[in-house]
Image (tube, rainbow, N blue to C red; front, side, top):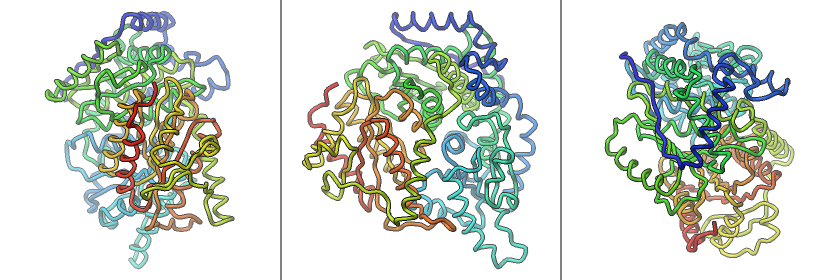
Length: 586
């Protein structure tokens, strides 16, 4: 691998905001934040002894670029063994931090040598589980069950399903062992001990315990799938090491410090909607950054709201709460020219624009570390602990309560519909129900959307199987809503986002306005050995999060898309177009 220049950045930021950033940067340098972070000095983030102890057990990510070198040879040997035994595909079954880094590597990194297909399963929608299972012959498929705690509900459900599939194949085979089709990425005991059948798995990859899930991209979480893909792990880690080295200097040239100070300071000045503009070949990185930033900063009423995958618009469609960050390697001239023009117009209109230059060679290694360090710094600027997720368990606990109710009553909680029209059914939270008028769907949608708070944002939460077509349909609705309201709109597939932006929704600024999208399950799928099906599980997760949002007095409504989510999304787009025929007041 050739030597790489350290990625750089440039900014176009209004003078008053730049002065605030400069003041905060001087403070960070004077107080030696960089040296203290590398020395594991938790007072960068807190003076509370209990919180400091928790932070101290979450800083292992700092060691990963330099500390995993001796694990690359065994990983490459493992991947070669898998290929030699005839495996042609791997499925990484995980959620949040355990699934997003593998998904980014699979989508954005070209193999440097022999590899196999790696897909990610992070949806409990029965159609998606069934499609993932059917995409290859189980006899040639390796299942990587990824869960830091070993107790995460979704990976355990996936394990129960795939174990049943493989067990049926191997049941009548002499010396057959379904476990040879499984590997795990987890923490040492007791975490790995919670995972059924783990003693029969062909390989257990156990991470250091002091690495949080969303800071684990450069650990076994990313490197095991990367080895199976055939990615050049040495180049990936070399780029990460070079970025880590550049983040050790207590100077204004520190790329992680610069980015973190800018994002944290801009958020404190009301520019808290971080709009990611990422080169197409690296576009998948946006969903990883979204989780890292949202879950790390969104708590105690503050936070940064990442907006990923949004097409750039004219200055007229944006409010004054945006900051635009472009990431590019300079290898896509047409995209660069298009975004140059759009960002120049936005900068001229007074929006902060930050340009990040990344390497053309193994850029993900560098960017994983840059954004981890920057997010840690942004947490210090915002005065929060960026390594915990205090509100994530709320929806999990509510889901457990919903499932308990189902086990006793054999039904999920249901609400009286506000309106049913063209196959779509709208329900809402208590304030929406109390003032409900049972008007046309478009009128009820508009009434819900009008509840958005000043400087607020909309969140579309789709509890349906993710497909490229549905992603495009949701983006079209989000763009329409942005253009007609001037508000940021985020899009997430559930239950994935519960392990990502879900923390921000409940713990961050109380300015979100939420619309859940669910569907029926005419072809449900059993979870072997469980009381509930995958359809019941995903519906319970939606219900649990609805309860959590409502308990925080956040406006939330739900649209059931019927038996066919694709048809339902088309109908929903028409309803949004009618609801937004007149712009919503900013």
